[in-house]
Amino acid sequence: MKSESHAELIIDTSHRDDFVNINIDVTFDRMPCDVLSLDVQDIMGTHKTDLMGDLKKNRLSKDGKILSTESALEKSEFRASIRDRVKKELDDEQGCNMKGYFKVYRVPGNFHIATHAFGDIVMTLRREGYNFDASYTINHLSFGNKEDFDYIHRSFKDLYMEHPADGIVGNAEY
Image (tube, rainbow, N blue to C red; front, top):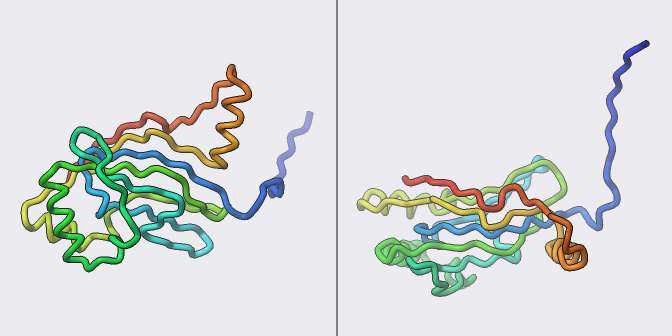
């Protein structure tokens, strides 16, 4: 008997390109869309804030109905206009659903949904007495081409595809 160890590096070259899709569907019941931002960073130095990709931010009424979808035009408004809209959304107890996909390089990194791209607006409103509730529900999170998942699900009805983050609920008020 003899034990032996060795290191091995395997590079997967079977993928279609240098990017991978991240599919998300996350609901924030009491957080305005205008201050939520999807941020991505990786070891290659990429750091993007308020990334959209093929991602929609749907404004939700307090009972969960879609009121509108954030537009690119609204993203380019003056900060004061965004702040005023956020105030109204907080008063109306609006929420946000972020749904769709975005592409990232196939390298180690992370993505997160945060408010720091709009930190000035959040801090101003907090000083005015507003509180932010970042509680969320992950309705869906997966990596890869969503159409491939849908095809597999349609073609192999008895196959259970697990997405371990689906259904996770988090509570965070600040």
